[in-house]
Image 1 (cartoon, rainbow, N blue to C red):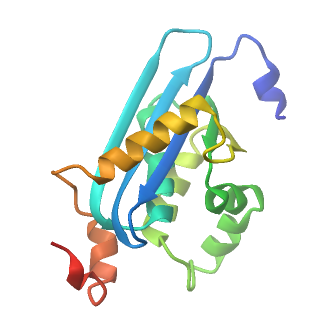
Image 2 (image 1 turned 45 degrees about the horizontal axis):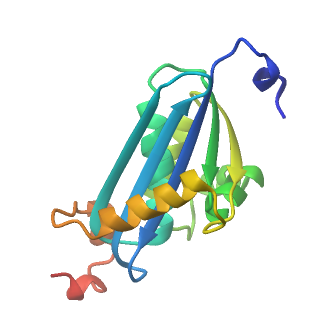
Length: 171
């Protein structure tokens, strides 16, 4: 683990995220749980979208969660059940993708947005097995599913624009 995280006086932030979609693509949602370790601070955020994918919601959850942390250079551990995200970061694929202008990669709009916020903090990613009795991950999973069923779903404009041919089934 990075030495920066070992300093006891440094504040640590835990960011738990989850995304879901019913159908892939289909209605989706994400949920975020933020806590500052050693304090009573906690924040929960969730939103639903009418037509998106699971990977987009997983990634959007991380992005929105990081964007909520406005003070730069924070020590953050992101807990996610998304191997898509963890592998992309831990294996440095994201930098290879960027170097190749994201050639033939999906979710370029979100990965570009992610890179902007990622560089502002000191972040570790921790994979959590989904549906494995981790109470905060289960909470985020439940919220993301509920968000996807909301009556007022947002529009994922970038995704819908890119997938005009596929989205004929949107109500």
